[in-house]
Amino acid sequence: MKEAPPDLQPPLSQLLDVIEGRLDSIAGTLSETDVKTAAQINDAISRMPTIFRRMKNIKNRLAPVNRIPPETLAHVATFFAKERDLVNATAVCRHWRETLLSFPRLWRNAGGNSPEIKAYIERSKSTPLDVSLLYPSFVEFVIPHASRLAGLTVRLVKSSNFSQIAERLRNPLPMLHTFRVTVIPPHPHALEFPPDLDNPFLSQTKKLELRGISTFLGPQSFPNVTELVLHTIRYVSTPMDRFLRTFEQLPSLERVSITFHASLYTNEDHRVVTLSHVQEMSLSVFADHVTDAHLPDILQYLRLPKLTSLCVQSLPRLTYYRPIFPHTTFREHLPNLAQLPELQVNIGMSSDEVTFRSPSGATLKYLAGPLSDYESHESRIWRQLPLRTVRRLTVNMGHQLIGSEFDWLSRLLQDLEFLEHLELGGECGEGLRWLCGEMTQDRMHSGVETLTVRCGEHERPQALKLKRLADAAGVTTTLICASDPRVHEEREAGTSRGDLDDERDEVRDEE
Image (cartoon, rainbow, N blue to C red; front, top):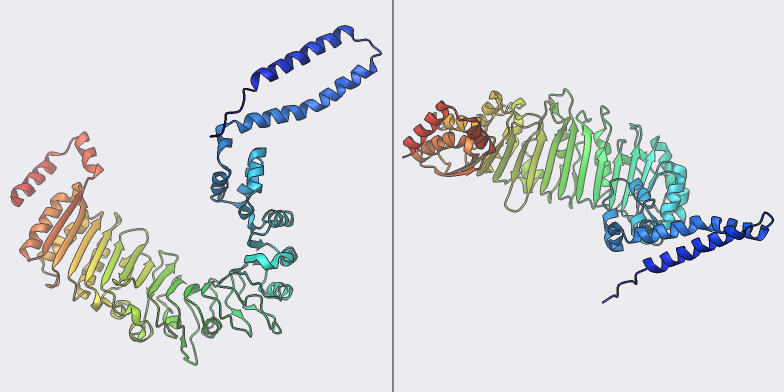
């Protein structure tokens, strides 16, 4: 066990007493011509700031915050929101500075102006680097350390500047995992590689992110890229052949995320590109004031035999948006999404969600504006989605439900011809009344076998009424009532006589 340090206070106190006594002695014998004594005093005064700093440093090291183990302090630094916070942390005290500088991995994300990039690269020592370049000329700082470059982010004023960087980085970068390009402001042209670039520096790259441009063009393919993030330009239509050409240049893709404007040009030659390895795809569509987003312009010309996760959303989320799928898309182009027996609907919220799932993990998700904007029964989207395979429906209700959304839910229940299990939850007071009306008017399919209702104590009376109707229809019902703070607030404020009478009536009927 490590011994405690000796008590330093008495020796320092005695030393200060000796110094003070010596000063009194000198003051009593001081003469006007004692140049030697004056020089000694000046020397002592000049040394005092250094002594004071050392004493303060020792005192700071005794503070609890500076007794944090170096590994713990370095781990805390990894959660800083901004890279600049790491630099600021080195100015807290000498101990923090020495500790943070002793962990090269903290300095692997280099960015900012040229002095900052140089400092980060130097402090990272031999650690793999992730560098962000504000200007193409900054690539000169990276070239000497290209062998340990794991990530590279380039911000360009115009896409044509990219060729300057590609020319400087002609040699392969063996550790480059992620390459990101952002064009500010967005530019409608493609990102072009130099035509004579025989050995591109992206030959080993796994992840490619392109933002603010339409697509990228070049004579090479990139067989090692497995993930693509492509954010095209809003209000700018992109020819479909450019998208397809991009996919053809990335034959090993496994994950794809694309943001594009709805008005895509059609594919005139109608060729279909097969992406044999893609398992996850996210499509975000700018669909401002359009009736039918041209979503099939991508999916109709892609064959995705291994796709198990598809997420589609409209931007902005409150936009009127109806994605349309061709009838053959799910059966032929998306075979793993043709059988999805579980459907979850989040409705009455700021942005609604529709999610189809299968027990194997396959998912099809829609993130869009209010579902009441959709013409459910007549819209082509619902005729093409795998509704006939749904066996379980979960509806989570928000507090913003309106009448048109209940109409939408009613049409959805009619479309789910083979529904067996229904679950209702969330802010479901109005939803319980709606479902009671559906059962009273016999609008639910007879195949429903089980009903689960998750509600608060506030909705319990209505839930009991629904349970009686379900039991009468031969539906096995499970009622789960959680504690609701609104009930306790009302009891403290005094519950109305009418509410008490309603509750007594419900209990009497239940008995």
